[in-house]
Image (cartoon, rainbow, N blue to C red; front, top):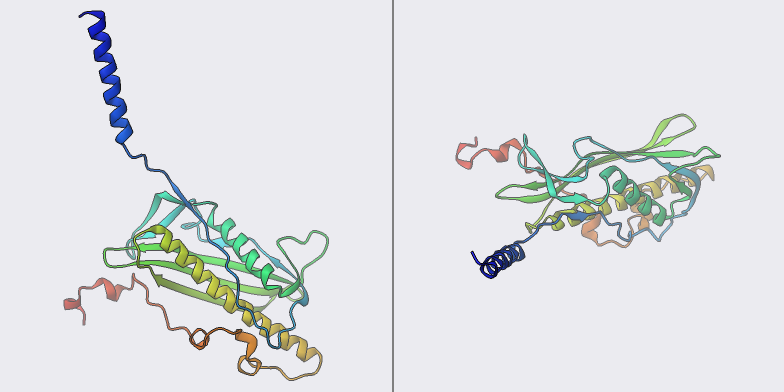
Length: 254
């Protein structure tokens, strides 16, 4: 083969490979994080900030979920790690930072920190996350967040306040970003409830110390902020997509 012909074939081959590579779509990982949104706080009889030092311990997340990859639940028995959609930071770190932002912005306490080096806090907020996942089935898409938290009095190591929720929100988009947004909204709503409950609790504690009668949420009025009436109503129970009843074909259900 003549040198010129060989060179021409080589150039054509390189051009062909370049064309093929140029048309190939290279998939990249997407990184997500939860976002702290402004809280609707009471403006009525609240006396915050209350003169206490409160420490937020690092959030504990179930080992199944405390990993870089987002977790999708396909059924009651099957979960899948999503290699293409990951958290910007591990859920334990991400949730700790998000909750710290919420509690700091709420201004409930005179001091609210992750660490108290030279002094002892009055209370410690402990948080345990049992699930942070997305549901992906042929019929449904949803975001699922389950969390419990408690405020421990350091004088006697007794629980001063506690709460828990297990919520699942439907998502009407197949894009994973919609599920992450739904997770953020769940956490926002529940943080708002927590702040209101703690505000009322410490308000009544202050009233008790002054010899005044306690107030109920209804009497305070502003304890639930200026949220719409439907937001103040008791939340309807959330159904789980992996409820065994739903996994039975309609014709076979009792």
